[in-house]
Image 1 (cartoon, helix red, strand yellow):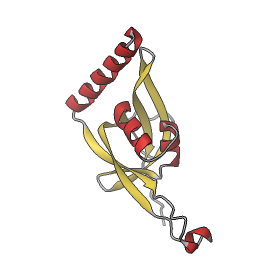
Image 2: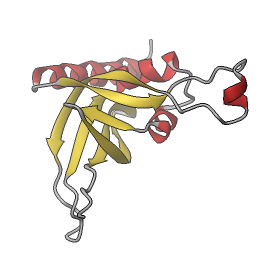
Image 3: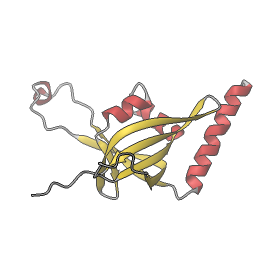
Length: 143
């Protein structure tokens, strides 16, 4: 194992330990369920879309500083372990973490579904150790 590989693995282990030790929790990532190829209603586009919730852990959930003064939605963010994201990416057949988050419907936190507005890779020593996921609460419609 080369020195750079050991260093990258060390950064990941340290990040995982920090996330677990800093009030980490688990949340659910809502993605679309796999299609059933033999189902005629799916082939015709008549089936109701199905979703599945997959657990993301360890994560740190926090309120983000508002970037836009005109934004009325509360901004939140998650810091997610890269180790956990890569495990989910491979398990569910996504090409990359970016593809996983791009196809996600949102993040379910305490029975509230938040929309993903951005994903940033956090990197040190040439290795991605975590992802920062920007979230937005739904704006309630006034009647």
